Length: 328
Length: 267
Image (cartoon, each protein chain N blue to C red):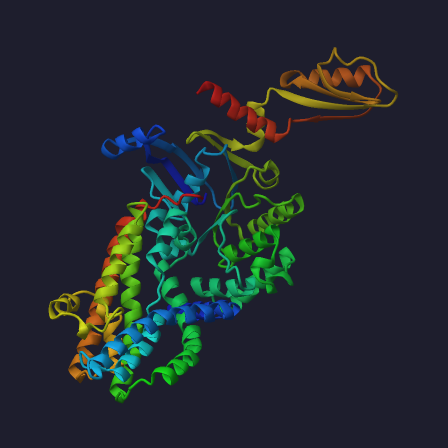
């Protein structure tokens, strides 16, 4: 079995933040007696990621996702714990390490605003010392995959947000990194553009076997790309496992949608009725009762169609965080 | 090494392309820069004329030469400022630079070197007009010309390193503009920017000799317009090299300890 690409053990990042009350008096007082709070942005988390895995890194705002990504990519020095990415200690920021990874942040740009993206691609070639034939092959392959042949000739400032994001993805992957840290890569994009970016990441992973660690508030990104998710909240790791296991663990209910051949009678005896119209009804059923209830409906009703679904992943995640906040 | 040369040439090309996008803005900027030396030139020429044609060994023509060459040296001295470093660090913009497999200072040095090539091209017609108006007296030897050409790039590197070290202080403390202003004030007096160093009191000249500032302004200008001996020319280049080395070491040390404090705020 190959060694993990990412190995994180008891990783922590704490910040010392100055605090004071509002007002002039407090401001004057703080000149002589400054008080600090220690914020535990990341608090002793551990996990490993195998080569080629695409892992979703989930958590509400301020959970510590981006801080963790920044430590993994070498931008931040950890306060404690050990960290190993591709056999390197990221905080040492060795050139050999940086040539094998990339970090895409949805609201940060690597492009020259005034020039066509092709010029920024060229600069990227020089930064990474890519052989020209290999660079041209990769560049053209990505341009074709993202269908941006004409866009790469326009000044970046004239591109839409989604078009710019496509360029950012290309520029970040031109050196064919083995590990991708994607921090909200689809933030602010419309659904079509989100899908294109997702498809591209999926295709890159399939073609190169790269490892991907993705944060996103769009669950569609996570569902489409990640079999495994890591959930953190207030800097602590809450869950690490398959997305389906997360749903099993944190969702006590399933949804049954029934389409009837000839109208319907009462469905309250089966469970909570969420929605009903002319010949369609949606029920919420406790997870453990789902097989029984399904069998009863099929036996007792004239069913045209029946589907059993897990609740939307957004609802599950929301429930996870809500539970943990309540516990805190 | 080949990779670095390729990077420097590509980055310079990008800078040239960007600056050509803003031709009019750059030209107006350059015209604005001319205002400062023109004021100095008019004041000192008037004083020279009132003192029988020269001041501190500079004739009116010599002063005209000094301040016209000043305009070129000033362009060469423009580097990534401490304010730029402050902005980069405070707003987390340094993050993307840190992801590259080379020190961010390489981007700055190469980018501004490309920028200068455009500005030098724009400078020629302005210098020609100034020469027609102020009639400079300029008769350098070929050695002076060669030393001047090397010295303006040396000045650029000295100033880049000094200001990078200054800017990197932002890694420790959030607002450092006041420190920058103090250094700029010292530079103004001790560099030859405000007035040729030979017009300063001797004790000021002694202090200036041991500081980096005059090697970025006065030395390159004087190398072309003054009458330095070959020894003075080459020792001047030696001083520039020394300050570049001191700057490189200082940047490395400050960077080594400072970058671990970078908090990459604002994403």
